[in-house]
Image 1 (cartoon, rainbow, N blue to C red):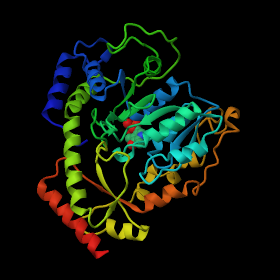
Image 2 (cartoon, rainbow, N blue to C red; image 1 turned 60 degrees about the horizontal axis):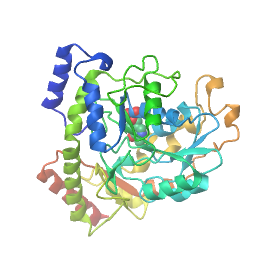
Image 3 (cartoon, rainbow, N blue to C red; image 1 turned 180 degrees about the vertical axis):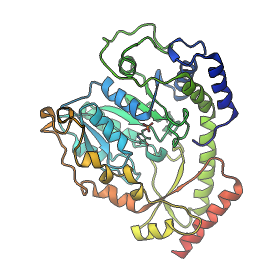
Image 4 (tube, rainbow, N blue to C red; image 1 turned 90 degrees about the vertical axis):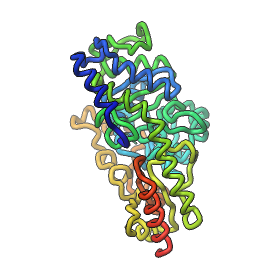
Length: 391
Ligand SMILES: *Cc1c(COP(=O)(O)O)cnc(C)c1O
């Protein structure tokens, strides 16, 4: 969350005063309006607001028919939720390297494709766009679906297109830590595919399926048993107001990011990007020759840097329930123990993605904020330059 204020308060007040807090029969249409805005902003045919980004990832995988017997390739550097979403549908996450951009390495994906692979899940981590052209080429060659985890990349772009809208389906997160929020939690599934949309609707609200968000008159897909990932009108109201701010938040992040990077580009190297203009620019990402140099820089006064290798559950070595293959409490529902999955690639080990660990150990993130004043930006530039000349 970068910016919130009276617009959100007023939108929530209107919804509460209406006393119609349930999206299916509200005259306020707050969720419906947020979904409409989301479709317009992202340039996509269908959108479903959900309780979280992970709910949207799970719904996308379900809608693609992915389950036991299937492998889904995920990068070794992403929040653990991406991999757990695969396990949640009964499939097996196959962990692949990231490349120098810290996003899914298309060459390693190609090496890890098997006859059981059904989908690949590029993750636009820190708002850095994945190499979608290369990943699409691999997906097309092998007949794989693409589910974009755009949870950290609300509003970002790749070659002009919004992240999340390039693959078969995309997931956004609006939890407190993301570019925009729906009130501390929230997410959305987006797609241009009507079947994925219908199945996502069914899965996210299987007991009622009375809500089409004004995007359809009726559903043609047979109803199946799903779960409840519905959101209420209060979340819709907040997201609607936040979506109006999205592009201005991104413009400020990019302006600050570019000011910092151009002021230090003569003395450092950056993590390369698949689309520097389209990135969300929530961090400045620097690249060093060694972990030692990276660590010395990160702790220098005023830098406030973090090595991505230290970001806990974003690194596959720390995905304890995956690495230790505990996919469910009940062993019969555990994808890692199911006979259908016995022959799939789940040979996890801490050294399985050495390049990923190396890149993460030699990079430093400096988080930036869209509200930083020119003075704050100038002192950050000074701190970075001082730290680099000390090293
Ligand atoms: C935050 C995040 C998620 C999950 O989003 P929630 O809304 O918290 O469920 C998934 N993937 C990535 C990469 C994330 O950063």
